[in-house]
Image (tube, rainbow, N blue to C red; front, side):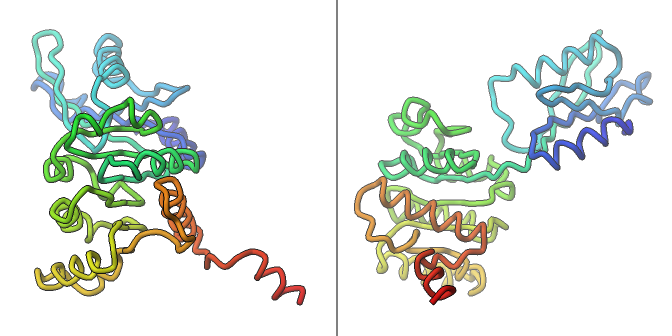
Amino acid sequence: MDKDILFKLAECAQQAQPADIITLVGTPPDKHNAAGSTLVITADYTGGRLIDETFTRLVIDKVTATATPWTKPLLFEITYAGNQYRLFWDKISRRRSALVLGAGHISQPLTEFLAKVGYAVTVVDDRPDFANRTRFPQAEQVVCRPFGRALTELALAGFGAIIIVTRGHRSDMECIRAVITQPASYIGMIGSQGRVRGAMKTLLEEGFGREAVDRLRAPIGLDIGAETPEEIALSIVAEMVAVDRNANCRPLSDKWRYKHG
């Protein structure tokens, strides 16, 4: 890879800026030497060349104009000058990302608050009347698919936080089984204490390890006496920030009194 491209990728990582990385992995026999060449695209930079200028422009147009947002590394093909080329599309970004499973009344303020504190939010639900851009304008992506299908298509390991707020126990369990072993620093589920105990008992009976089950933050959120959807969303986001910052959630006034006594 060109040294200038490496420097640019390092800069993007340091500044938490996204970058698309496209690598040529399949070529016709007479273009074999071009395999492995890389193109990097950022908001203010395009570096590298694939085959020739015309082909490079085709790739840039496909990546920047695609109607399907990038959610995980993928392969795609382009036909050029009668030949088929295969490319691998990856992306880097240090922006915090959250997956909200369920698009009900709590998910709306939750997504809004998460976006305001810097999360790129993906919302998933199987109901078109709920999972749409009109209800979630602040979301990075809204996926209207059955939970099981969506969870197999999304790159779950890329989410730093996963919040389960579906409409029912069956959907909760489907989601928990798919995410409980993911490396996210925060995995939480809404629900009553009885519902949470039942879910954890089921997971243990199904063979999930105690360590994995104990990672589930449920009931979700900090105890602030929340009642409305907005208050519940606030308690969830507050807990997420506290986990991210390794904070103890102690009132600042108590800390000040202890220190200045």
